[in-house]
Image (cartoon, rainbow, N blue to C red; front, side, top):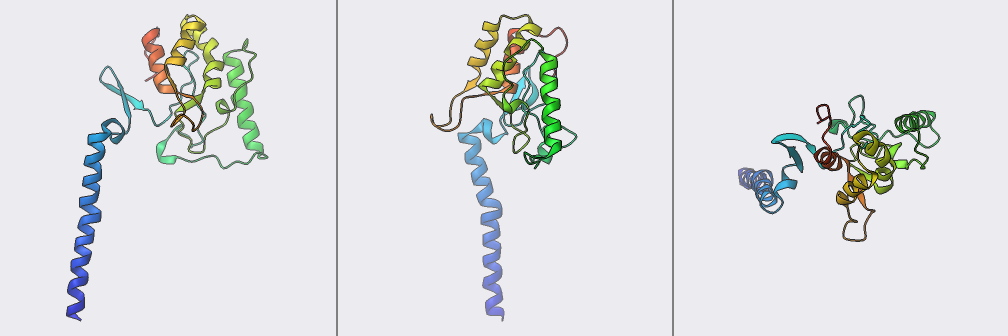
Length: 198
């Protein structure tokens, strides 16, 4: 029995050290060396103050900011601890009511806008944390943001273009805009009269 127990315990201790200590330290060290920003959570700072992550959406509701995708992560919007979709099917009345309320909020914020409302502005993403919107969603909001910030529509469109992310590997997905980065660029171009929402 002793002849079996000792090798088993030594193997357990070695595997625990390799997989529980050595491997995580090695991978973390390599990640921090090669991808320092991503290893730290893709955090974004402004004036030395942490304002968010490029990977997690935020709930912008002021009309002078671009709005992101709705979140179904519970009472606290874009809560990473509660990441999930709503799991409401297309025939669910609750989903129809939520979409109707979101459409009404968008129309109320910009009543003269007759463009069709992009789906990603009224439906939550699968994770509830999506930090990006489609080009159509950004363009839909451009007139409202331009009016509220007293900017020309061309200047707002320039900011959208400057903050557009290309397709991954040039073929995957669609061009998109990170809402937090776009709103930070917007604040830099036309500072708000009141304190920023970050």
